[in-house]
Length: 259
Image (cartoon, rainbow, N blue to C red; front, side, top):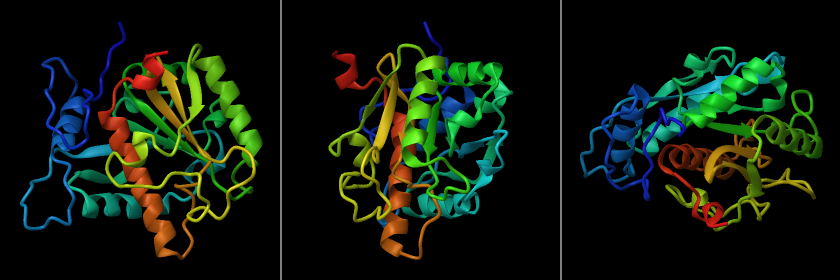
């Protein structure tokens, strides 16, 4: 049986959760944080923030692993202001050569997982996922730092097929709960929020291992540098907040588990 060193799963991100006795330090932080999730706009309701939760950026050999890192603090501030989640304002570097370091973060972001070539590092990432971790992959639209859209998609599909045998990868429909587990997002079918969409693969794809979504492969460019457009910026940050909440609080996907 696989260990889950991260969060116990609940059916609703805003519902109280029962915390098992044998959970790790990270699980405790996430459990308290998930219980405390409330919309910050309800200022008349005093809701103390829970334990601080963190996230990381995957360190790779590519010079592009830090691209748009200046946006991380803006995103953290947005999540802090819009929810009662006590998110750490710093996005920490997560070295795939150090399993213990990976396991400090319930969610790790990378703009290109295929930049990890070392089999030992991939084995650490696989173990991190088996322990309950979650990886969020989002492509940068700037070709100086990223692959074109289709090769990016194809190489990630090949990578997951190789290093996570038996996983299932499928596009998430617009009615998937990740689009409304906290903020309501209309999905990726509409190009209004993403003027840079392309003809082929352009949505977000869940990577499922034994029914649990362990990674999200995004070609929707939510994390990429935001233009000077408040609607585009806010919609992207809300969706990333949803991804974080979903990663912390969801368990086995019923659609996949029933197959």
